[in-house]
Amino acid sequence: MAHRWSTACLALLVPLAIRSVPGGDAGSATHSAPPAKLHAGKSAGLSSDAATRTAEPLPPLGVQVETTALQKNARGGIAELRLTVTAGVAIDNAVLSAKAPARVVFADGSDEKRWDVNLATGGTVSVPVEVIVPEDGRYSIAVEVSGLAHGRTIRRAASHKLLIGVKEHKGKVKDGATEYPAAEAKPAPAEGA
Picture 1 (cartoon, rainbow, N blue to C red):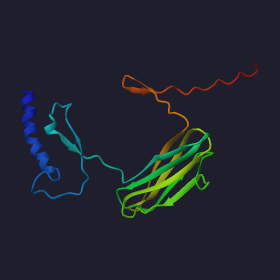
Picture 2: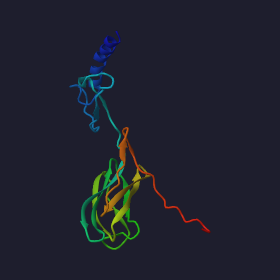
Picture 3: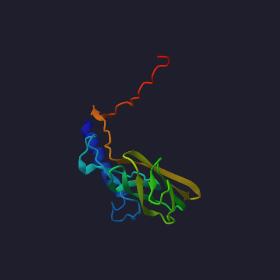
Picture 4: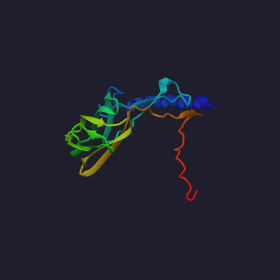
């Protein structure tokens, strides 16, 4: 009985859902919304024909950092990074900044860089940058973009893990969760001993 009821409801709701989606009906107006991700309702027992569409919102401003090349030297190396800023809305006075950790410098010798980026009409801007690392190790490059959207200050930041001559410690998977070992601190010598 319950199965017939859910099938009957589904048969009534699917045509309504199709008509409410842009391009779902020949007489509907076109919308400029980004394409929605498709989520199949397999857990609810629905077939892939009766999938539902949901739109996942994107932030109006984003920043990403990726390593595009790495030149490993005997000690340390030179890493080429690409800083990518994506704006879904117009951003005025946009400034991209990057800060290197101690002993790490950019190609011009500074430890902090700033770029004025043109996001007045939104879109994507990529900035290539080189980082010189004197020793092997794990480093974190901090990147931030800020500007004005509709008269309000908006900021986004990212931290990029840069590994030079070392491997990342991966935790082991146990019961579907990743376990990482706790930080081990060496005990301090006892006073008066």
